[in-house]
Length: 278
Image 1 (cartoon, rainbow, N blue to C red):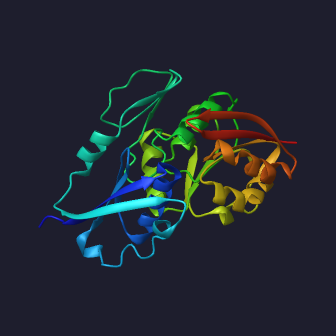
Image 2 (image 1 turned 180 degrees about the horizontal axis):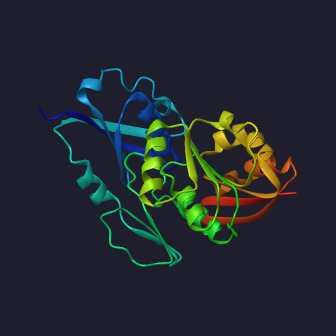
């Protein structure tokens, strides 16, 4: 018997970080698949997992910072592979890095990352992932011990290994992201990446030469001390997941420690900031 799904089509303003936050909350509520579009996201949950109060715990829907509307419909079995193929376009970063799904042709650039995003974040299409890859292109990664915090699809950890980093830890609190990262690590034949499900508490006693944290502003601010405590002297911290206007707040949280801002990259008002530890 075909599985019946309930589909919610959400219109979100502002689109980011609203859509990202909404997807995270819906994932915890039991929604299992998401297709992002120019207006927001379509979220799917199996009908037998659905209940009339499924959205009651989705806090962003009552937030004054976002305007979100939605429509609901019942859907017969969906071919998710077709959905991904319709909505996941191959991209390139600076003519050096390609990010594509398995069904895309290889453009034969220097670095070729193949991911199947499923319902995880970090397909490379979001500005912050693009910016982080640009930063990683500027860093000598050979032999560096790296942490990808909030790894999503594992794309930044995978690229770090391609750039010569080893060993690499990739951590995400979301179970879908954890499983998807493992799949993508294997898909790209990476052998130096360890994937963990959890949060900043996993970092106790760890040390890294480079920490990559592409999450959101509030989580970054909450966990900043933990990240910085884990960076070796002379090490690097790359932060993204926030807007240009948020830089002063992030700067204040970072530079109260022995950290110096080195570089900022910007794309469509999203930023990625590089810091160095004294």
